[in-house]
Structure formats: structure tokens, C-alpha cells
Image: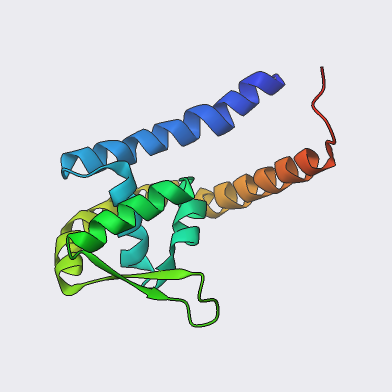
Length: 149
């Protein structure tokens, strides 16, 4: 396989196809992808930070901030300052938020569990290979001092 084909499959097709599934799940529940990302992360990691949501979902900081402000106004989340770093904002689902998010996120987690179960032993291998691929990509990118012409 050539470089373009490999990168297209790894970075474009596989990630994009999975992201589209999450976008459809969000739409099915009357949400945007960004709201789903915040709810999913807060549901699975109480006290998560906006930074962690950005990193996990590939979203811009301002996008996550705007989404959180909207969810806060709706009473879905609360925000607290980080204990160690006051610049960090920790996100917590309210009781209303938990009741709202639970059926949406638990349904998504069930699907994810079935996919992982179907992969069997290959699930961990896939994760290991993808992490290795990303690390090597980052290393090579860091070595590059200027784009090739």
C-alpha cells in the first residue's frame, strides 16, 4: 500500500467513519456532536476538564467552552475551578444532566461494548498498533523542521 492510501485509510476513512457514527447518534438524540462529546466525557469522567474534552474529541477550545456555557445555562452541567490549577475548569453533570445524559450515553456505551466484544483479542492489538502509529507520526512530525517542497 502506498503512503497516501495508508494515511487515507488510517486517518481519513477510519476516523471519519467512526466520527460520522457518533454524529448520527447525537442527531438521533437531538444533540450536536459537540454536546455529545461533553456529555460523554463528563458522564464517564466526573470532573473532566475542557482541555481533556478537546484532546479526546479533537475539538477546538472555544468550541468546547461555548458548548459548556450553553449546557451550564440549561442546568445540565456545573463547572468548578481545578484544585491544583485554577485556570482549569472541571465539569460535572448536575442531577438534571445525569438524568438527561444517562439514556443517551449508556446506549452508546452498549454499542461500543458490543463492537469491542466482536473484535475479541484483536481489540487490544488494534489499540496498541494505533497508539504506536500515532506516536511514530508525532515523532516524525517533530523531526521535520520545514515542509518539503
